[in-house]
Amino acid sequence: MKFGEAFTEYLHNERERYFLEKCSHVEYKRLKKVLKTCQTCKTFHDDEAEQEEASVDPDQNQLSCQCQSCPVCDQTFFSELMKEASDIAICFNLRARHLLHLHVATGIQRYLLRFRQCFMYDQQAMVEEGRMLIEYATMNALAIRKILKKYDKVHCSENGKHFKSKLQAEHVELLQSPWLIELGAFYLNLEGSDGGELNELSSHFSCDLDATPPIMALILPDSLKMEYDLTCAICLETVFNPYALSCGHLFCKSCACSAASVFIFQGPKAADSDSKCPICRETGVYAKAVHMLELDLLLKRRCRDYWKERYTAERTDNMKQTKEFWDLQAKYALY
Image (tube, rainbow, N blue to C red; front, top):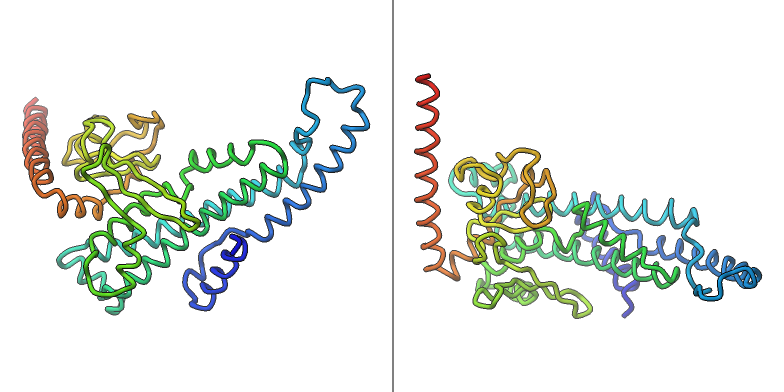
């Protein structure tokens, strides 16, 4: 089955289930029609280029796209696709965060959250919603990738490839979302529970923490595979108590705090707005950092000795920093 047909069938099934009815989707068919218009535009410009061939530098490739200034391409295609990608990313991140918060919340907080949901979020319901969220993210991400490849094919350009980089820079690349990694860890944490649906879902994810580097892998439709490096770029160890900055890079909590010049007990979100990511050097990425609780739980269960060692070390550093902080506060109070 071609991807366009598979995506249409997916949208039909989602409408029947009334799931994510308030969330955006990629207008795949409409964008393909836009590309057909662009292709007509390209043919027209190619004909013009042939007529003016005598005045054109013979070393230039006459098949190069002449649609760079086409208003259909510049004002319709990319602007609409960026809006759709942004809306999809916002919807996915919010729904995934809410779902996983229900799973990892403890004590009275968990009780109140489930009471507000009228006790509808049992494990099976959470598994089903997580499955649909993963399908929502992967299908729309693939639709964006496919349509950008078609754009480059029609225009004989790399504008689609460049636009994909822009999506990553704007933090709306769905397959790079830390919440997708969290959902993967969620299913791996539930692995072994009863239910064929859960086992089928967990088979799409794998995690090799003994590999160099340690990775989590996600198998996508069309046999595509995404791999996520679980190494902290600062300590060069498997991430412990991990945080994902809004630029998508993963760090241990203590390493992220050290890089941002804040205390561990304050957390990465206490960093100044001009603090930079140690990898990409982007500013303002600490304020919306995601605490990867499911991933941390996965590491705790699969690497017990390593997790305990890192926990003890972080706890010691945290107590030391806390003492230093309050000693400074007392000193300032005296003066």
